[in-house]
Image 1: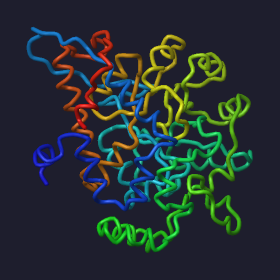
Image 2: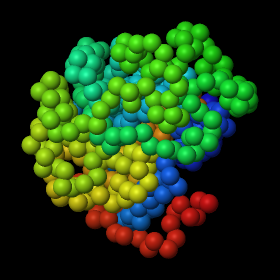
Image 3: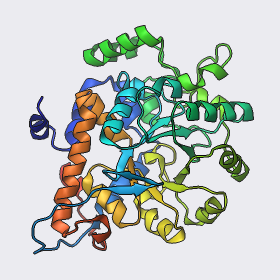
Length: 396
């Protein structure tokens, strides 16, 4: 399809999401789309974003907004990147490499998960100059040091410590789907796969090349058959620990590039992170996948901005360019999207990520035009909209 055909047929993230759901098996969809508990935190993310509005501004003449953004010593053409998602290759064949290439071509950061289906060495040919490695903290210091070495030697420039997964969440939707860790091809799952031929064929080709889907970064640290794990846990939970401040200080001493901490929701944590030498704070409630009693991430952003001068990265619930502007106006320096990029890839294959990037860019330009803002620092003060009827309600 030509670019204009894509914008005509898939003008919004909802369109990509709907097509992705039609192209991947149900158990994979539930893994990607689900949260935990009643999914109230996931819903709060969306509702909280919808309550943030702006007063339109008029008579500004022709505009060409500057969408570039600086972060950690780098200038990016757009203020967003690709967030880490575990087992991306399950969602769409070769997802990690495809997303890394798309990010590199657009000059945007790509973050690889420790529990992706590709290890850092596999990604070396595909990453650009702004690749980040997300660390689920290994308990063993030797494994920890080796993983940092592998990431550094493979070309990853920044390290992201995720701190909001001390234990496996329950993710009831995912469990009901029949998915196990590692995935086992039960008759139920095979029936779901048979209904999704594009995913099935692409996955079969990848498995013929790489073998069974697995978390390749962890292969060298696993001995023997680990057996079957609970549906929402995985082999990473056996190797990892719940980090403390001493753990963070160890990482700071052993990683000489930018260090970020992901999963921060409390303003009171900022001072200790600054003291530990963290270079950026990543505000996130894990998109509602870990804890169902958390506020929307965007609700905590202003207070965290007031508590620190460190750069702030934001995720959870972002669905369009307007959401990105909402986060920036409330103090975020940069925004990361995980589910959205996987919706795009599953919907349109290699064309999907580039289409999403263009879609977000055009959406930001259109909304900045309404606000009379040529640059992000010219965005007006947000206003709180009535909670009675939100855009999400209207979509339904």
